[in-house]
Image (cartoon, rainbow, N blue to C red; front, side, top):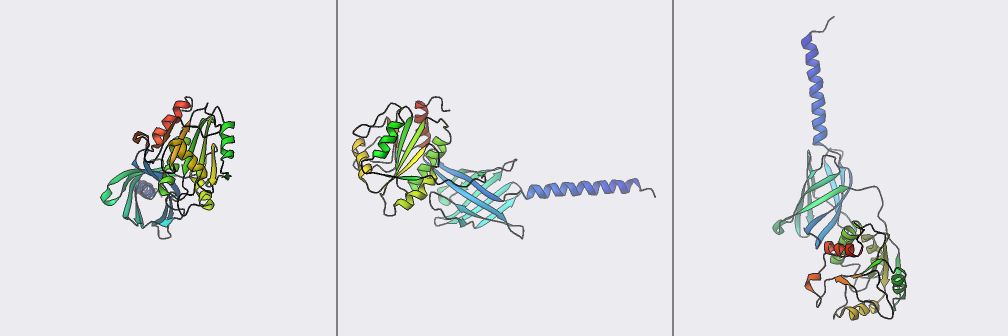
Length: 303
């Protein structure tokens, strides 16, 4: 029996409708499963907060997720709500400061979410998320530093000819952790030159600062060109206090040294620095973008 032309046309239209509806369904339900990493920018170079989000599709077809901000805590908490409508994605986070909302759009390739982060009365700021690779976080080794800083001095002089930076940080300071992660992103990830060395002194300036906290904090700056030191007391940081001519221990100090600097009997004076200290130039307040630019001046081929 011959099929009527209209029957064939109906079948073709039905098949076309099925394909279109399937494509639309797929477009409306992108696969967001897995870990996403990114940051929101409150003030470029000065205050940027990293975060990680894990998204999971439930058996009912809805979405759930967790959020973690490593500068604040290493423990994730559940998101209040995850809404997905096509490429539009909304994440609601119930924080101690009130409800915070990520309102973003999935990129055409499905690997980025870009949008605005709403902070209630504080307004909004941009955020960016990318699908995270399957690589595990690296916990760099932590070395103990003697009170005469000889381990650091020997390494500093052995690395002569390279540009060297010294960071002085508290392992439990949220602002310090934010700044160390910004230095990782803007300096180390953007400048790949192997002739760069950074030595981080984790110091016990806050009640919760101890060696275990310092071991955890090393994950904020995992680059192979970075060496992490733990100082059991404030003897070494106080020596930097004398060099910089400040009245307080220079925590959150980011010191930059030229390749020809030598550490002899006393700590050398940095060529420039960025800080959060009283008594030092205001135009040298911490800014990771400006810090990266200073590094590039001494490493002209690093870009």
